[in-house]
Length: 148
Image (cartoon, rainbow, N blue to C red; front, side, top):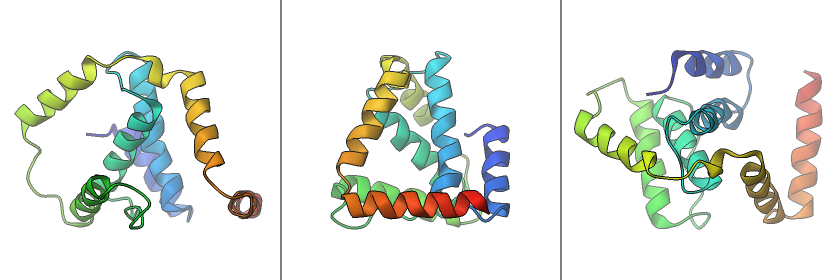
């Protein structure tokens, strides 16, 4: 369950009309903080980001699942499930046994995924997969929304 502070920051972003990916960024940020403070670990920075995005979708952020072909079918299905769960009214509480199992597994993972170097590596490799045109468009949009 995300911390109340994170939920509030995401709601504030939504009120300001910021994009769903910006709202989801708050949840990813929270995951990195958890890793850094030793609450749990992650296998990689990418896994930490995936956990954060999953939490965001389940918390009701309107972050669409990745387009078909952009990720593995398994990741696609899970993202769709998370998104649907977040868009429905709050239902049953998560299974405590399952939550403990997941948390226990993450406890055994390393803490390097939360390091500045790991995050930087992930960011650079993600940027390299985008074309120069895509990067330029994103930069222009960032500059435009920064002024608002």
